[in-house]
Amino acid sequence: MVKRVEIIVKNHTIANDFSEAPPRVSEWRRFRRVFFQRRMVIFGLAIILLTGFIAVFAKQLAPYDPYDQDMRSTLLQPSEEHLLGTDALGRDTLSRLLYGTRTALLAGFSVVGIAVVIGVMLGLIAGYFGGIANIIIMRAMDVLMGFPMLVLALFIAALLGGGIHNVIIALGISALPGYARVMHGLTLSIRENDYVLAEQAMGSRNSRIMLAHILPNALPPMIVLITLQLGFIILAEAGLSYLGIGIKPPGAAWGSMVNDGYRYLLSNPMLSFAPGLSIMLVVFAFNMVGDGLRDALDPRLRGLL
Amino acid sequence: MTTYIIQRLLWALVILIMLTLLVFFAMRLLPGDPLLIYVAQSQGLASMPPEALAKLRAEYGLDKPIMVQYFNWVGNVVRGNFGTSIYFHEDVGKLLLKRFPITIYLGTLSFIIATIVGTLAGLLAALRRSKLADQIVTPLSYIGITVPIFWLGILMIYLFGLKLRWLPIAGYTSPLDNFWLSTRQIIMPVICLAIADIAALSRQMRSSVLEVIRQDYIRTAWSKGLQESSIVMRHVLKNSLIPVITLMGIAISLIFGGSVLVETVFNIPGIGRLMVQSIFAQDYVVVQSCALVFGIIIVLTNLMVDISYGWLDPRVRYG
Image (cartoon, rainbow over all chains, first blue to last red; front, side):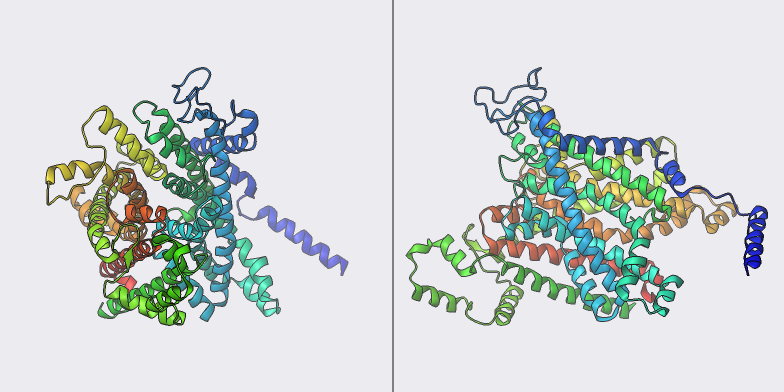
C-alpha cells in the first residue's frame, strides 16, 4: 500500500517535470503586476490613502476648529494665516475641507455597506432559489430602478426627514438594486458549476452552498463593483448635501460647502472651488482604483462594470 | 416583433402599477397622521376640535381601509387630480403640467446631444487608438464621469457668466417666447446634464468599437477593398452601437436624476426644482407627485429603449 502511494507520487512529479504547462505564476504577484501597471491607479490609491489619513487625523491636521466662528475675520482671502481663506461665518475653509473627508468617507462606506449586505443577500437568494422568490425580489428591484437614483434618494430622505443618517439610509436603498442585480447574475452562472452540484449531491445545506461556495466565487466582481460604486455614492451624497438634504449645519460636508460659497462666488471663488475639487479628486481616485482592480482581478468584466 | 412589443408594454404597465404602490405607501411611512400634518400646516393644529378633524378625515376618505384609499388615489391621479399644494396654493396637476415640459425639453435635448457627441467621440478615440484624439477623449471621459455636475455648473457660471459675461448666469425662458435668449440660457444647464452621459457613452462606445474592429467581417470588408468611410459607417458603427444602446436606460436615468441638481443651480422652474422646493416647504403631496412623474418618465423611456433595442438586434426578441 505504502509502495503504491510512492509510485503515484513519483509519477506525479515526473509528469510535472515534463508537462508543457506554463510555470505557475503566483496569483498575488500577477495581481500586483497588473494592478500597479498604470500610473493613474497608483495615483488613485495614493489619494484614497491620503483621504483616509486626513479623515482619521483631521483634528491634528486642521489648523483651526472647523466650527469656530470668528465674526472679525469673515470672508478673508487666502493668506498665510488661512491658506484657503474663511467663509461668511469666519470659519477656516481648509479646516472645514479636511473635516469634510470624514463626511464623504463615512457616507460612502456606510451606504455601500448597507447596499452590499442587503443587495448581495437578496440577489443570492433570488438567483439560487429561483421561482417565486426570484420573481418577488427582482421585480421589487426593477421598481426601485424605475426612479432616477438621485430622485429616489431625495424622496426617501425627504420622507425620513433629512440629516446625514437618513441620507445614508436613503442612498443605501437607492444603491441596493445594482448589487442585487449583479449578484443575481453571478449566482445564476456560478450555480451551474460542478462543485455546486457535488455539494448538492452530498446533501449540503443550501445556506452552506450559498455562503461557502457561491459567495466567495462572486467576490472578485463584487469588490470591483464596490470600489467603482464608492465614488458614485460619494458624488450622490455631495449632490444631496448641496441641495441641503444631507448633513445639518454646522457640520462640514463638501457638497454643502459648495452651496454656501455660491453666494460669494465673485469675491471668494475659493469657497466653492476647493470643496468641489476635493469631491472630484476622491471620486476620480475610487474610479481609478476600481478600474485597476477590475483589470487585475477579472479583465473579462471590462465594459460590463 | 409584435409579441415582443406587447410583452414590453405589459411589463411597463406592471412596473407603473408597482411604482404607484411604492410612492403611495412610502408616504404612509411618514411619522404621524397625514391629515394632522396637513392641518398643522394649513391652519395650525391648536384651533382644530376633534369633531372637525373627524369630519375632515371622512371628507378626504382617510377613514377608509388603506387599499381603498390607494385605489381612490390612483383613480384621482389617472384623471390628473393630484390634489392641492399647500405651499404653492395651486392644483398640483396644473403645477406639474406647467413645469413638466421644461424638464422634458432640457432632458431630451441633453440626451440627444450626449448620444451624438458621446458616440462620435468614442468612435474617434477607438479608430485613432493611442493617437491624439484618443489621448484627448479618454482622460476627458474620466473627468466627465467624476465631476460633480452642480460644481461644474458653478464653475461655468463663474467663467462664462460672471467673468466673460458671455451667457446669462441663471433662469429660464420658453423658446417659444424668446428663442435666442432661451438658447443662451440653456447652454450651460444642457452641458451639465449631458456631461456624465457623454463620458459614459464614449467610454462604452470606445471599447465596443475596439471589440468590433477585431472581428472577421471587418477584415473581410477591408480585403474586399472597401473604403474606410464605408466600413466605418456600414459595419463598425452599426455593430458597435448595440452594446451602447443597453446603456441608454441608465443614461436617461442619469440625466433626469441630474435635473434635480442642475435645475437648482440654474434656477430653472422644472420638476426637479419643484421637488426640492416642496421638500423644504414640507409639501409632501407635491413631493410624492414629482417622484411619481420621474418614475413614469423613466419607465416610458426604458420602454422605448427596449423596443428600439429589439428592433435593432433581432437576437433580443427571441432571447
